[in-house]
Image 1 (tube, rainbow, N blue to C red):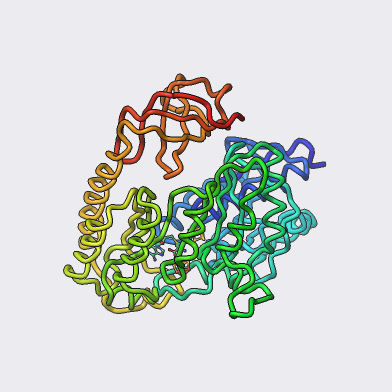
Image 2: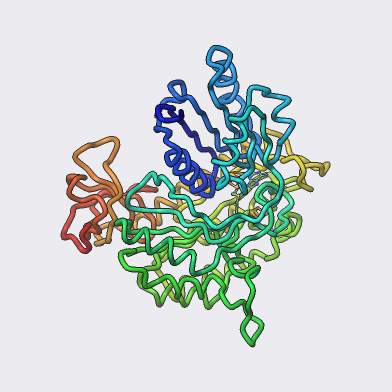
Length: 451
Ligand code: SAH
Ligand code: SF4
Ligand code: F3S
């Protein structure tokens, strides 16, 4: 019955959503659905949504509105809202867009098939109750054939006062090390070269798993996991995100230094460079502690890339406090920084505080921070000029078919002349001839690892 039906998925938001979308696409293909690039050609449209900031949520409604309208002339269209807006809005989304057939929170991604069967029997479904995420037995349809996401911990138990994630992703659930290992082994067998281990607060990995060492340490924390999965055949590179400064350890840094497959890149959001703001955000560290972490990383790995996230114009943030963020960025010199103006989110403590800042202040601070970020990234890129870097080739340069693109261990996007059919999935040493703030161009020298 479903043989010739086509599906389309649009994914908003972070890497977790991308990973969930790949699993849901795998489920749909297992059910016989065929992929459609264009949502307007599809019989089933799934929006995997993000609610981290208001503009992310609004985007979802505008996409959804178009498909809801289309359903009036195509009643057999199945319309699904998955992900974080689905979790946040639940039933009220059904009232707002009654054309939707299925609303499913992120914890329910692996249940797509059984939920669809309920839809097919004629009901509108809202699946947002907290559940234990069943071990992933689905075969994801991965976007890349070179790099892959692997979830290691779902959810987040932190209580940052601005953030919806704990509310929409639920409490922490670590996967067993053996399950992670098995998924990576399968990826290695399929020819994947790089794995990014994922968690909203990946440093929390293992703390909900049974079993502790005599010292009271978790039997498997992130560092143990890195040692454990490091020898998976075929996987040449391992990345992980996102690190939380509160739980980041020296033991982890040492492991990254010691283990050759771990890439020299750390994504450690700091959010603010001001201690009072950090306290109001309930982040659990000071800017001094953050600086010590970075110093420590650089002690072991002087060349490591550092990226982070920051929020400007948090409620009550003074000009002086904002300048402390500028100062931190100036002092550390990030390779990349994701910046955002604070956006009040429903159900979070900071959203109802009275000292919200104006849109003018938000956009002024964001622009000033972004200027500094670009300048610093350009300075950081300079160090690559003339150097030889190992680049894992992922695809073709979309702007120049004679070039391929890939990433250095430090996560800098790098372009060089070559044929993608020959080079995809290989690691090539490349002499860097041109540097830009967020990307590099070079000349290939030799293949280090074949596809
Ligand atoms: N777990 C990660 C962050 C996940 S959300 C961490 O702890 O750092 C990704 C980023 O979105 C955050 O780092 C933060 O910079 C930003 N963000 C989260 N909530 C926000 C809000 N209400 N307004 C603006 N930016 C926000
Ligand atoms: Fe949100 Fe904080 Fe959890 Fe990150 S650690 S996902 S910012 S609550
Ligand atoms: Fe967005 Fe949900 Fe990720 S809110 S950032 S998609 S966890």
